[in-house]
Length: 358
Image (tube, rainbow, N blue to C red; front, side):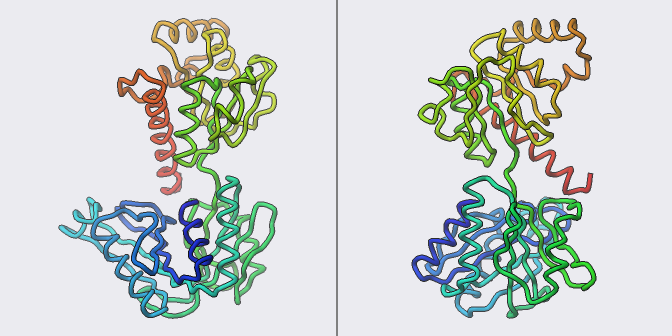
């Protein structure tokens, strides 16, 4: 999402109007998830995508209309049969989209977009509320935003009951972005929980680790590089890392790390002994993904040793080893691609379960 916020700030800087299209809700099949956006500049160029095909082309037309008229739209797109196929919605479906006209002189929205850019750059968390005065299928009306960063600092505001809105993040969200009723008002806002898309802890900052760090950052993971060698665990070697941890020993590798269910542990140290040491500790964490590099023989020996130490079969089954999808990669770059592909596969699977309310 960083590219969207950066493009918005650039348009304000140059004094240009622009349009922002956001998927608010989906029923049935959709090429992209709720909360996906793209930005349309006055010259017709686009930043981002909501899935391509006929669906995106129709939303683009609404965006161009918004730029010409200076009016925002809230539209429902329905796809069946051949329309569904051309929009890559295999089983058909509906998508509700907000096309927001953003005038160049809107100082309140400029401040919000600047803060969103900084939050995204820092990989911090925030709640973004969009108050919708426009009915489905309608146009005109005001689009208001309110942003609460992870320190509770407010940017923007609503004409409606702001106290109720500010309390809404305390509720458990079924998904990261959804239309939610404001308590006690009957009105709805579009609520988004903006947060890093998982944190990958890379144990081993050698050639493979550096490639994984680069690719992980590219697909919006927060990246933590961990090694006991300062000459490898340094910004010059892993410039894409959000955090670098230099250990005294891999035996205490998890003491300063905050590992949770959204953590991805990638074990690519320089030796079998270190890999085993890290894996022992990894299996005692709630990490959502644990992967270890190595030959099948090496992996078999390490896992058998852990079973002898008292780990259960269910623990061993958590380990993705050999790590990565089987694409036949040999170079550090190819191995990095296979590792990232596997992590993205698991992250997307978790997101789909969450969106179904699981």
